[in-house]
Image (tube, rainbow, N blue to C red; front, side, top):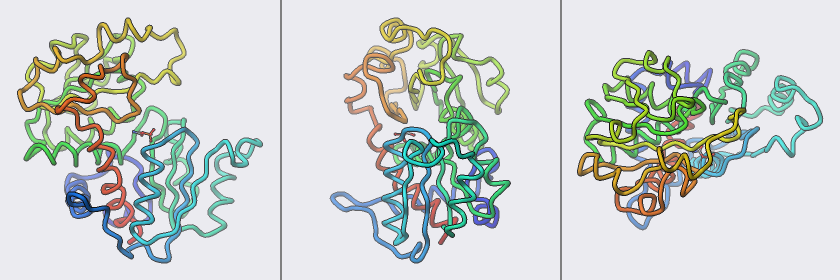
Length: 307
Ligand code: CP
């Protein structure tokens, strides 16, 4: 697996084995700063150039990759699709071939089309790091989510995880289902029927579906809320107030979960649609810990691929 990561990059969680995931999580722990410290400055990527190519908007993922690249002593260039020649009609493969001709050592890529990084990877002899592809996968998000859970719980095995929201359009949900099920977590997926595809129950062992928040939250150790992805919904979406009434996380819901439950959200959060401010800003919320762990996890991934 190590060689595949070095040659192909990180395209998904599905094809990673449990040992490789554990090594990345352990290495990310090494990179976590202590209280009042910042991230370690190392030279593992000295002389290595990474291109961060974002065809979709991003704050957390793009900035944390940039910080990770710099903290490891590498050089990086970030490009947004709006400012690149794709806006003049250049194809994805032509854009990637053009960038590859400038001899970077890896490309970090986000794209609205599911499978775009895998497609590019078949055409280029360059490691590709998937920073989120359509509704397919967001592998570094699942790694940072697992790192965050393990900062609060001793193991993922047997953990009851409720993933709630727009499951249909969520690459975060899919990567987390792959990762958590490899470690033996019990997963319940919950959302409105229109956003909860029945076939996801077959994605991995230990996955069940529910349309009912109260049922999904009973005894949960981890509540993972998801953003409603309006940019991927082509039919009239539910009003924010209507969605919040049935699937917005409020303090009374958190009471139904385990007493030590943690509340997660990959961000960006929509207060008053996916969760209330009381919950988002509560002691149970680890949302900013997730953001913090994004840097450590991406340092671990980049070092493994390029170091
Ligand atoms: N979680 C996540 O991918 O956030 P960004 O869209 O801000 O990168």
